[in-house]
Image 1: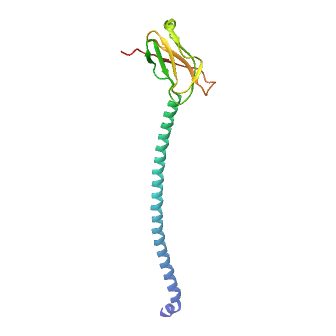
Image 2: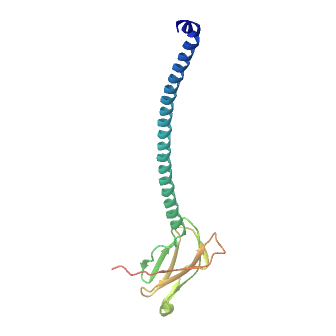
Image 3: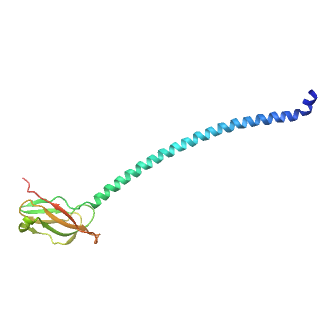
Length: 164
C-alpha cells in the first residue's frame, strides 16, 4: 500500500486538489449567485416602484388634459350682467375666439328685446355682447368656435336679473 501511495501520490494530491477547488468554486458561485439574485430582486422592486410612479403621473396628466379640454371646449360666455336700466352684457371668456351667429330672447320677450351689438360676428376673449331686454327673461346665443367653421352651431341660454 505504501508503494502504491508513493507511486500515485501526485495523482492523489491532484485529485484531492481538484475536488477541493471544485467545492470552493461551488461555494463561491453560490454566494455570487445569491448576491446577484438579491441585486436582481432589488432592481425589479425599484422598477415596479418606478412603474407605479409613472402610472400615477400618467393618470394625473390624463386628468389635467381632461380638465384643460373641458375648459377649452366649455361655452365661452360669462353670466349675463345687468349694466343699467334694461341693458344687459355678456362677456366672452376663455382662451378661444368665438363666432356668435345670433342672440334672441324667448318667444314671449321678443317684443321687448333689442340687440346692441352687431351680429353675426367673431369675438375675442374679453369682448362683450350687449342687449336691451325688459325683464329677466332668458336670452339664447347661437355660437361656434371661430377657428372651426364647419362646427355645428351650439346654443346657450343666459339670464340677467336686476340687482337689488
